[in-house]
Length: 544
Image 1 (cartoon, rainbow, N blue to C red):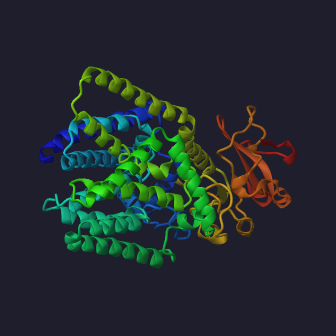
Image 2: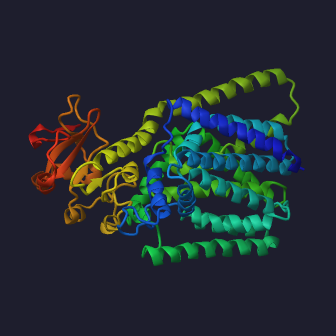
Image 3: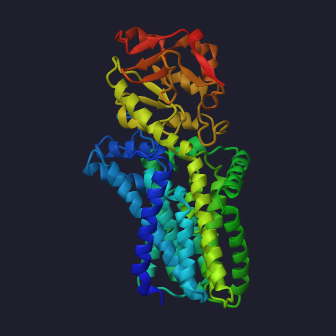
């Protein structure tokens, strides 16, 4: 019944994606077309692979998988093989996948209203309202250059295909699409195997007669996971991406505690999320009760609810994240308003004697919802822009260091933008792109998902320069600043050994200045230049 409306749904999805992306860009004050620092890491791997250097962070260095999304890195490798400057192409791909996620969501909503026999129009417009009120989703999906849009689209596509399967409302291509979606899930993100197998097994319990297709889908997901794991073992020598070992603590209780804080922060601070989740809980209990009577639409609702709650708990179990606007939970953002949209559709289908007043109240509520969503995003604009500034700082400092002789090895915190620009050896002190550092201490204490720094490993290698390019010099381009807490580097800057081995320096050109710390041995070999200013430790000011 809902097939003839594909074109209308696509047009609506296209408009929502364009509006959402434009709002995300405008409300943040304009975002540069360079992505965020983590995306720059993936781009650096893709560039190295495309140029024949292999899956490495440093050209000529160790093989390391510092990019979690295998399929996205592969797609970017193709982009870099086509052009050395694929930034606009990557953003276009992100927008295309975001469009796919929104479009499939609208198709799912239309199917649910058909199965449940409620009006479709009010449900779709409710979805449109909440998507327009969610610029954070489009910021993460379109502008960051991360794999989030691809991951979101794949999760929602799998949910949609399984919903049609359990409702016995599938076409001839559903089985092939389901097998393909299941096979791709573990390639997009490692947790894709858990999401795919979990949802497929639940669907089997809801629709036993689909055991052949669902069984093949499980085999496809498992085969894909085994294949990528075999590749990782043979190429990198470890079964998971290096980011897993750098971020996830072996202290599971600590990780779960951090993850639950992350989850509750999302529920309580993301606009309307607590309300939407509560509506989903209520709708899930209703669907479980009604599914016993084989009411159409209820089994599909159970699958969608399992996807939402499953992903919420998966990332809580993994310890959460530190990025602005709850990056891990953004992929399910299009699914969250569905329960409310169905309630609105149900209410719209009932007779009303105060239709005019209801329309006015609805218009006021819609305006309020959008203003609240936009306001929360606007308040976060400085934290959003910081993610992009890190890339700009890394690109500028890397280009500068390429002209310094002798070219130093450098230790860094932000490891993305600098990798795209600097041709020397880079030590990722947070371990994401350095196997030894990631495995040095399995228990992670400190900054969430960035707590792998290990002092003995640092002293074993002693990079020539510890780059603090994300800090600032004073107005007269003099003293170097850094955080007094120094939590990411375990108080390294305050250690007596560090102060004996390293000296504060400021690298500068005519317009920029970058505070850093350099080893005496490298400074003795460096070409004397006004571009490198050396200071005493007594001259350095620590920020509180």
